[in-house]
Image 1 (cartoon, one colour):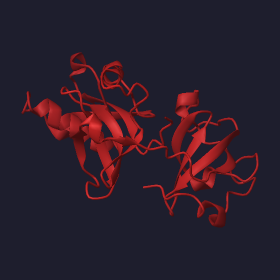
Image 2 (cartoon, helix red, strand yellow; image 1 turned 180 degrees about the vertical axis):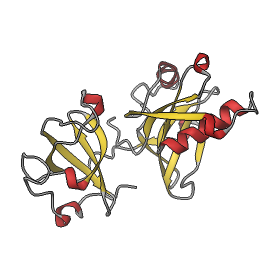
Image 3 (cartoon, one colour; image 1 turned 45 degrees about the vertical axis):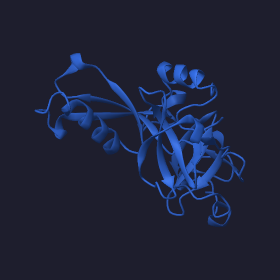
Length: 211
């Protein structure tokens, strides 16, 4: 199941505590990941301040080996972090697993919207959110998982626009990687920013809404 990555992986750590190592969280933002890590570490070390917590964006959702083991155990071997699921009338994205072999879901639609909760596998319905309309386009935006460096010139690549937030951002698939990219970097033909036309509002409005 290909995911739409409304969440990203963040590596979190505590400043000046390098021997504690990194913990990876799947979250919507660095601040959300920091809050999760702060809550976790202060259960044991209450003296830690929130301002001591750091988060570094890694890219697409991280599926750990422990998660894969849980998915295999639950007869859901194809499930990945980042997959979109439905629980009752609410839709969310899988972000992890629990010690009780359940799956952690962050909801973005329905009665559970914005809640992160443990869900028993029997309650999950995995959705294929890639069946909606998509737009072919091109971009020269740096894609870190493909080896590009932020702020430096990247190759012009063909891409598929999957959804649009009706403001500035789109979810875009580039060479198998799904990223959040500003619409000004999405072009109607091969080229670079300022040299070719961006994909029009009219076309973007045909896409699903990016939550």
